[in-house]
Image (tube, rainbow, N blue to C red; front, side, top):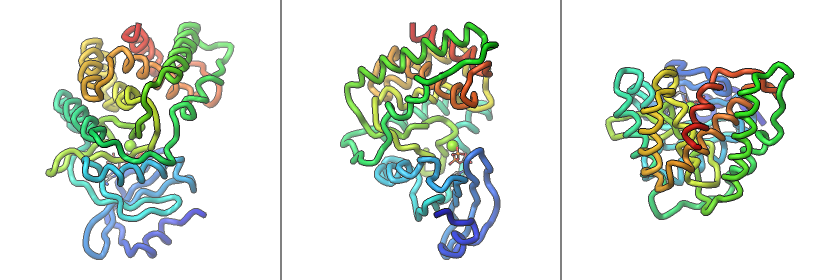
Length: 275
Ligand SMILES: Nc1ncnc2c1ncn2[C@@H]1O[C@H](COP(=O)(O)OP(=O)(O)O)[C@@H](O)[C@H]1O
Ligand SMILES: [Mg+2]
């Protein structure tokens, strides 16, 4: 059952202060509760696009720098309001070095011992399954097609060689961490279960809106080093996951058949880094 924003406002005693974001799959408002301000995220899909496990994981990681979850419904979540720029904003405002360093610290904080309980999380095998059914149009660039196939083979190899399965945020990157006065706070978890080397793979495609930085081979090498140290894994395995995740994102965007993509060149760079 899907609740309308009005029903949620009524049930949780909220007043809207402003609209904060309207993304592909959710809308976020700044709201007022009886005693504080909060963020209300309402998903378009009744099952929250499978992000339910994500907020449970954020709660389990409460003392490790995550947003506090106040209420949950089938298609919505009410969170504490976080004041401050995202680490993506910090980077876009001219300090990408600080942004990636703080992201690495946030990741290692989430993953410190002891490991939290992991029931109900989606496995990486399940998440990557669509990549193995990837199809291409007749006009698809042959380089992209071969890079996608190579990345799918890497994904298979990585999935089959996972040594430990840990709870994963699943979408940990600079635009999903807010830098508050009390330090970085992580939002927007998917809640996956799998190889710790996956955790910062998607971070290599970020910050949003900085395509030249993300494609700079020196920056790629620096982030592979920094992020692999933070997660206590090898840079080689991280580079392979970066290619696999980039390929999966290309497939997700493709509407079933891959033809061309704005990250085709980035995928090639990740494959080169993984070679
Ligand atoms: N708890 C929060 N406090 C303040 N701003 C938030 C909060 N949660 C989300 N936002 C804002 O909304 C944006 C999108 O939220 P996010 O949960 O990352 O959505 P999406 O799943 O579409 O990526 C964030 O980048 C941030 O600007
Ligand atoms: Mg987000």
